Image (tube, rainbow, N blue to C red; front, side):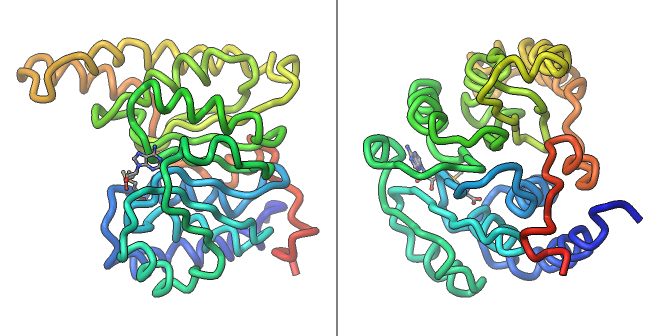
Amino acid sequence: MDNHSHELVEFNNLRNRFPGILQAVDGWLTDREIEFLAAAAAFPTADGEILELGAFHGKSTIVLALAAKLSDGAKVTSVDPLEAAELHANLQAAGVAADVSAIDAFSFDMYGSWDKPLRLLWNDGANDIATVRDDIQAFLPHLADRGIIAFHDVLNRSGDRIHNFVDDILSSDHFGACGICGTIGWAQYHADPSTTASLKAERLALKDLLTPLRAYHTWPRDFGRMTKIAYKIKRSRVPHGPINVAKWIDRVGAGDFAATGLLT
Ligand SMILES: C[S@@+](CC[C@H](N)C(=O)[O-])C[C@H]1O[C@@H](n2cnc3c(N)ncnc32)[C@H](O)[C@@H]1O
C-alpha cells in the first residue's frame, strides 16, 4: 500500500461514477481527459482556486468541482459567454451548482478584475493563438508556485493551442513537470525557474515531439490521405496515454493530504 492509497480509493470511486454523472452532458472530453482533469482538481499541488475558461454545457466544470470536493474543496470559477441554460441545469443535476461560480463573460472581460491565487488554470475557451496568449499573460501571474496549467485540444487540429503550449509554456524555464494526456497539454508552474533545471530535458523533449505537428495547423481542415497518415504517425510519437494517477501525484508533489481530510 502506498502513501496515497486512501485518497486513491476515494478518487477511484468518483471516477467510476463519472460515466453516469456525465451521461447527459454534451461535450468533447474523452475518458482519459476526464481522469486527468479529475486528478488535477482532486490532488492539489498548491493553495488556490480553480479557473476554467470555456464551460460550454459544463462537462469539465462538473469534473473539476466534484474532484475538488474530495480534497480542499477549491472554488471553481467558470468563464464562458455562451449563457447556456444547459450549463446551469447540468451543474444543478450534478450537485455542484453551489460550488461553481459560472460567469457569463469572455476570458478577456475578466483580465482586469481577477485577483485570486489559482492552483489550477484550465484553458478550454478561446482557441486562437492571440487570445490564448492574452489569456496566459493575464492569468499566469495568478497561478501559485507549483500550480498546474492545462490546455485542451493541444494534440488535435481543432484549434491552435498547440502553438501556445509550445511557445508560451514548454519554451519557458518556469515550467517543470509536463505532459500530454489525450489531447490535453499540461505543465507545472515554478515561480523560481532555477528549480526546474532537472526537468528541462524532459520538457524540451516534449517540445521537440510536438513541433513537427505545428505545420499541419496551416493546412486545410481536410487534407489528403497521405498527409493525414504522416500527421498521425507524428502524433503517435507523442506520449499521450492515460495518466497513472499515483505516479502523477508523486511527480507533481501533490502529496500532503493529511490536512485536507481525505485521509480521515
Ligand atoms: C470546447 S467548448 C468548452 C467545453 C467544455 N470545457 C466541456 O468540457 O464540455 C469551448 C467554449 O469556450 C467558449 N469560449 C470561446 N471563447 C472564449 C473566451 N475568450 N473566454 C471564455 N470562453 C470562451 C465557447 O463559448 C464554448 O462554450
